[in-house]
View 1: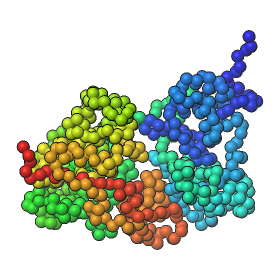
View 2: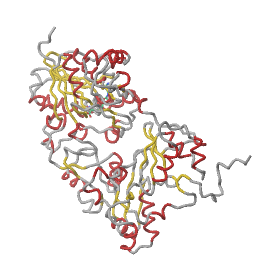
View 3: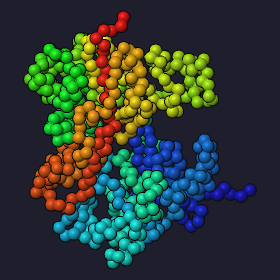
Length: 584
Ligand SMILES: C[S@@+](CC[C@H](N)C(=O)[O-])C[C@H]1O[C@@H](n2cnc3c(N)ncnc32)[C@H](O)[C@@H]1O
């Protein structure tokens, strides 16, 4: 009998050994883990068990030993196939091999969302604030900056070194500095960007993606450390609003910006009006604001800007107003009280789906960009016998509804069509319940203004870029429920209802970019706010404190497509009108 072969060999003499690249870092967000490659910029999303598999290679080890141990770890794929993928993406390498020496034929490509300023000596300082990580600054020497300016998305590193006549270690130093996950200003591509001009769908995603999540270090001995909360644990997110908001302004400037927040100041795209004023104009134009005294209910009032603007617009139009806000977050409720002090506004703490409304007989209800925060459920085809053939087995479908609790009850009660659902699928049942509850407290003839990110015929999509998950709204479903309840419904683009000028150009940001640019400008005494800057507003903000070309990269786009981090054309409104004569 021969002696067992050693599993781990620290002698590095065995050519069969592989090790995890020291240039890889792990990140986690909402139950998902990612590996970022600090030289190439690759971003690999994977399950925690696959990361644990990669982590088996913390010290040099023979891959066949690891594969044997994990022979049954992955359902459909073999562990060997994952070794192949990790080799391909430079996550596994031979021990003592420095990958930086492999890069000369790669083409450096600039990452997105860089913030930098030119230094007087010809150097360049990058400002980086990915996700919640603290701001870091990184300065390139004048020689290194020449390498940066030479990057055109077509030339290899070798060609750049030849063109700029800088020592090789300067070029490699730039890749190490700018490719690092704390900076993410540079990615390496096998092909020049020209190749993708006519084939954008072939462009690898990592070239334009960024990694804003928190680093994640698995525990000792390959045991995974505590993962950030999985997605399912967030449903419903109302727990988030009740407890987790600590700083009200921070919430809207960084965590979650709304159109109402970007347009809280008089804005050129609204002809000098604020969002709240524009909403009232839209409702008046549609004759949805009855004459005489008005009782208004706002649900989820954010920082109170909308309440203030709406009350002031109504008073200016000669109306007497009583305005109630129903708010779940104590921190936001306090901000609303402060902002509306002296106005006829009362803030009531409560959960709009569970607690009693402050009153009844409302003439107007406003629920602006809040229904995406209400409860949703995730369901799948199997429980309804969907997607298995042409015909749905009605008995199985009904049994599925009966086993789906409140969601099943509501689908049945309102005949919500779910036959074309993807698998799995989400139902915005909190929004449906809100419509149910509102019907009881609205006066006949009253209107509810409900806006959110979503579409009439598109199934809810989960966005995970925030610090809590949010779903888009299937407005078609909400329309079905609302009509069944007896409401008349109108559906439209928010930007059309508020008469937003679509063609102006607005500043483009992401959350991380906004933080970095805010820090850079603050050093020059400029306060960047989370408002929808047009090109002119931004130029005015900089004044003479920044010379043209001194800072970058500042990008503008048509505001209907992108404004700060939002895509205005994705926001829709459904207006629910309670008929004057309600059928018995
Ligand atoms: C995304 S913010 C929108 C704020 C504001 N309407 C705007 O458009 O800027 C969502 C608001 O709804 C509130 N909210 C979330 N769930 C709620 C619930 N179940 N009941 C009452 N308010 C809720 C939040 O606290 C917050 O004020």
